[in-house]
Each structure stands twice: as structure tokens, then as C-alpha cells.
Length: 354
Ligand code: KG4
Ligand code: ZN
Image 1 (cartoon, rainbow, N blue to C red):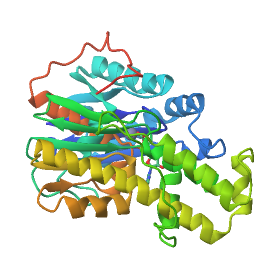
Image 2: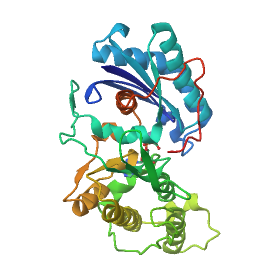
Image 3: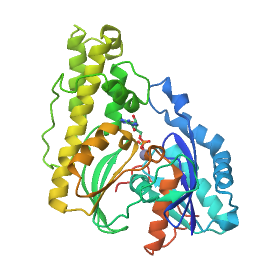
């Protein structure tokens, strides 16, 4: 069964085609990131306009890459939420229209859940992808770390899952992006911080850890503010000094130490919560997902504590937003007997929760 997945929740216009929930046939992604970089974050109107401009080309590119025509597509899956309203609309209306004109069953996917399913891809036609070879067993502990979400969830099967904890303020990727901004690094900041951290001392500064009622919840605004205060102190400025000018008063070694300490603190926080969840819920498989799953230090530290579990993370190109993860998730909804949605009724859900 070939499922075509459409993802437009943020700044990536993405269409992927996946066979039987495991074989990657195509993965076309257009990012409007360059248009947002000068603003230091995604501008919703610009993102939505860009989706409109490129969605048809991305769709065609995906079909071409898979060498398939519409007659060979069995179902369409689309991100319904969470995400930016205007961006989601482009994907949902496109998917609904295609479902109507080509008579295909349509399935709506939760974006955050979709990220987890990038781990189910075990092979494909595309060059330069690394696939997970081990099979995934329930219960699954999912660690979803992205620019918009930070969540721990347990899946008992494809349709039965519950949230253990989530961020109460900033998502982890968002915190990386904000710290990068203080250090004068371009958006998106996650990859920049991890690169700079390689030349810094992770123990140079100790950052506070939030004490939360639910031990599985996260809070990254504390560490982020601590970084701001630290940068002001290191720059010899007081707390009124504008954060965007601090970069001019910090030398390279101070910046590297700040990046390394921040990354260390965040990775340590996530790792400790995962360790606790593993002890309590004894998952058979642990799946890392979302844009921050690209972080090598996070992968390394989790691998250390998950040596006995089946610990998987997707190829770098499948960690950030893509249509293949949506197609894959759609497939598992289909084989779990979920009914298709009515394309005439499907609405976006910008605040969709897990
Ligand atoms: O999943 P994603 O593409 O978008 C959302 O759905 O949010 O994640 C993007 C986020 C950005 O905040 C980016 O800074 C972060 O993932 N990111 C990283 C790394 N690569 C991307 N964060 C830390 N280390 C990385 N290597
Ligand atoms: Zn995402």
C-alpha cells in the first residue's frame, strides 16, 4: 500500500510517499527557512504564502521521485495540527482536494505523533538515507523534541497512547534557537549551538534545573534566562543590557563555553527524565523524534542509558519536518482500522494535542 503524506505545519512544504509503512519511495521537502532567517524565527504569513507557491511543485517532485502516478497511490495522509493556521490550511485543503478529485481515502495525522513514525522507515529507494533495521515493539516510549514540542509519551499500540509530560513553556528546540540568538548565531540555532559546543567546556557554568510537580514535564525558560544573565555577566554588563548586543562583548571561548554548558544542561535534563520513564514503564522500544533528535550529544547520552532497550532515532533528513513521516503514520492508522475522514469536513486544528 502506497501512502502519500503532506506536511505543511510550519516552514517546510513536504510531500513523501511510503510503501507499507516502511519503504521510503520519495521525500520532497522545500523549506522557506531562508525567508525567515532575517527575522530570527518563522513568520506565519510568509510561511503560508510560500506553501501556496510551492506545494504543487513539491507534490509533483515527490511523485516523480517515486516514479508513481496517482493511480498507484492508495491513500493520502495530511498533517491536521498542531501548527500555524495559514500553513496547515494549505496542506489540508490540498490533501482534501486531491482526495476528492482522485477518489482516495484521506487520513488526518497529528504532527507530533507523525515525528515518531519516521523511526518506522526501514528501507527505500533513495540514496544517502540510513534506515532503522530493528523492529519496533510495544510498549514504546517516544521522546519528541522539536522546535515546537517537547513531549514524552507511551504508546501501547498505534492508536492507544498517552502523554507522560510536556514542556510548560519553551520547546527544547526553541530554547536552542533563543540561546543561539543571544550568542549571535543564525537561525535555526540548534545545529549552530551543537557545533560551537564542540570547542567549549560543558562544565564551565552550572545552569539551574526546574523543579516541577510532574517529574516528566519540562521547563526550558529557566535555563534560557540563566544563559542570558550569564552572558550579561561574562560581557561585564548589567541585566538591563540588550540581549541582541551581547554577542559583541563575548569572545569565542566564552561563547563556546556557554553553548556547551547549555547543551549539557538540556541533554542532562532530558536523559534523566527518560531514565526515570524507562524504570517506571519498562518500554520495549524507545524512539527519539523531532528536529532536536539531530543533536549528536543527545543521541550519545541517551544511547548510554538505553543500552538494554531497543533505542532508535531517524536519519537526520527525517528528523526535521517531512511528508514521509506523515505518510508512515497514516499507514499505521489505516492498518489499525481507523476510518478515513470526510474531505469535505476536514478542518485544521492548530492547537491539536497528543
Ligand atoms: O521538528 P522541527 O523541524 O520543527 C518543528 O516541528 O518544531 O525542529 C526544528 C528545531 C529547531 O528549533 C532547531 O534549532 C532544532 O530543531 N535542531 C537542533 C539540531 N538540529 C535542529 N537542536 C539541537 N541540536 C541540533 N543538532
Ligand atoms: Zn515538527
